[in-house]
Image (cartoon, protein in one colour):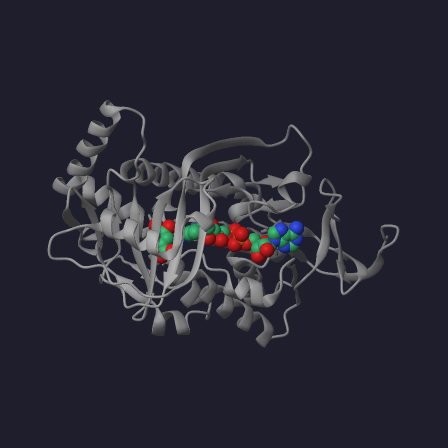
Length: 399
Ligand code: FAD
Ligand code: DHB
């Protein structure tokens, strides 16, 4: 084994995985089930990744995959299955009966950090290598069949030699930027608004998610459990969170969700933060021995609830490619990895952009406002339009 100067020859593995988010952890688990070794390197602590409040909506296909992989017991017990959503505008609610429109498919509400906890518990149950608080991660020799990852852990420099590297290190990770200039085509759209998200210890005021369009901006009522509500407000992404004391948040939520005969219940806010909205795709998702997956390769605005789901789809495709390659030496699936994933990625980009521009206050001009209103009324009055929204929202089986 050759070693980079200053690094101790450490481990050797088949698949080196950078990042222990949903993508990295799911990939490691799928590979383990097929007898393929991997090592996960994560720069944050276990506590941090297990507490990070983010997504909450799992598509039918994501739930099916986690259950089939044996990490869905708690998800099945505690996940809340929803067969519809409400679109609210003009003081009226309109239900989109997603399950009726999609032959019985549904979404499940289950916090991303719960998925992460279940996957970490599974990994540790069979002593799968998973290093937290790893610093200075760098990937090398990507254009060779012997790439490596260098890092610092517990103050010691280490080097991990691999057959392939999976870059599952999120939008701000190091893997994507390690690909030589000129290889990737980057597509990006940054929206002039963000989401202020809160978690409040109060019973949800609704049984199904409410996506509200209001002239003051978008609002979303989601939930995490019978005692925990998750709510979002469209805000200026540059506004400091300090400008949003709890009373202001509740007041704004009351205004945007206003509907006769319906009451929003308040409770203590235990978490709040502002997230920017962006669409981003790096293509191809593969260079030499490096495969990008999840947010490392693409980001969607949160309105379609797709980020986690498309990340899980990526690693399903990657795992299938690696299983074929280790099993028979055939490279077809690995070679088509990027194209296969990008088909779904662009479908999901289009849907997320559709939901975002349907429901947010866009402040373009009065003409755009009227178009937006016409689109909302169409989705709520035409079964064909509602079915299109529904099949994308619960997740298309084939793209
Ligand atoms: P990440 O979860 O970002 O994981 C990457 C991991 O890599 C992290 O643990 C990070 O610490 C680690 N890392 C980064 N750099 C390094 C490095 N140099 N070395 C080692 N490790 C590193 N998606 C949905 O599907 N449904 C939703 O309802 C939804 N709602 C959302 C709401 C909000 C407020 C936000 C912010 C996102 C939401 N998303 C949603 C998106 C979803 O959370 C992401 O798409 C998802 O986390 C992507 O998973 P990932 O594993 O690719 O990346
Ligand atoms: C949640 C997040 C989303 O982005 C969304 O569209 C619906 C629900 C949530 O965190 O529960």
